[in-house]
Image (cartoon, rainbow, N blue to C red):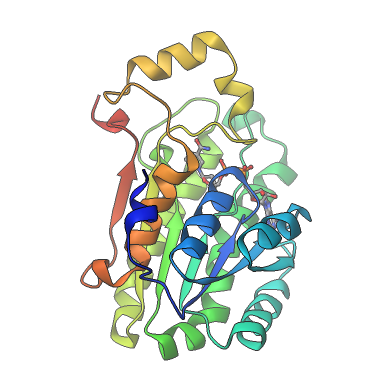
Length: 250
Ligand SMILES: NC(=O)c1ccc[n+]([C@@H]2O[C@H](COP(=O)([O-])OP(=O)(O)OC[C@H]3O[C@@H](n4cnc5c(N)ncnc54)[C@H](O)[C@@H]3O)[C@@H](O)[C@H]2O)c1
């Protein structure tokens, strides 16, 4: 049984905006927060957001986060529909696999726009509402933020940027009562990673480095996100928690 099933409903009465909410990890986060009592606003560029929202009793907002106007629309929609923004989870992300020096300039721009700029803009748009709620932000980063991984160097650079944004915003927004933390997932098989993890050799190499002996599933990550967003983590800000089965220590 999952911890999120046994917990009392720590997010009752709260509104959580989850970007990438129809993706592998984001949909698990949306599901756990909903089961813990939150009204979840499922934000994604894909209209799969509608099915996820329907399943968890949440609100779908289909928006491309690279549109500079989208953060304001998302926050306005959340406040209009649910009255507040108490939790913001920036889980939308993309990956481009290529040697860094060969990356297409448009791919570089898109990586930065989705993985870094969108989280920053949405935070900016939501700050007033989050301050009113004394809320929490959780950013989804990556182990590649502080490890050099050939083939996803630009992706790692955007995630390193998001780690530093997490820490800097924790300092600036702490006085407003907003906590800002991050989770660095290990390997989860999702549409982003299945190309790699479905290659038996790659998968075996990864598994050999994981002390807990299995890949993560979305809920392994989501439970820790929900913890960081809850009052149980009320004295935590500016932290980056790896949720990786021990991968990073091997
Ligand atoms: N899967 C892993 O092993 C892993 C490991 C470390 C970090 N992460 C991070 O976790 C997060 C979720 O990844 P995932 O594995 O669930 O991938 P995923 O591809 O399943 O989900 C990503 C979601 O983001 C959405 N998205 C992409 N661009 C968008 C845009 N412009 N506007 C709105 N939505 C957009 C996609 O539609 C998708 O639903 C990402 O930030 C990723 O970098 C994943």
